[in-house]
Length: 225
Image (cartoon, rainbow, N blue to C red):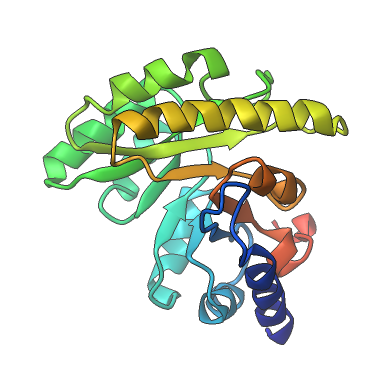
């Protein structure tokens, strides 16, 4: 657990100067396949939020965690929305209208407002969900009109690529979309962009929220999955 605490402290120090726009960067620990003990070490060390990819993992762990904002960052099936609404502080992965409608419906039924990010598939990759760069702003404008929904910004997924020029250009495009929405809507706060492999580039180009797992916890052991 000391190793986790040390890694969080190092990340905090690295992020202390903010992003390329001088904004504070929120540190979200991606906790897929991590034990409650390991997650609690990260919380104690000072991460801003913890985030699960899978509904069942969230349900199994949530009651055993220290007080900390809980996010959801994985692909979400509509029939599992009911397990999360009212319990998740921020949905990063609002990647299609069908899901947005269901989060809205359940939120209204329960008398809550759900904070969401519009997920953008910046590289238009077939294996990833989300709206395209060209669709992102329109999706934001439509989803924010749904009852029980509060759009807080965008979550971008950059492609796996060694071409840093390409990745930088895509990150810059995401920042432009974020800036446009934020100029018109004071509820827009977050551009969640960057994971363990690319967070430095994303922070440089305007991300103010990163989602890191292996950088904090080490590489996952998928043999235990």
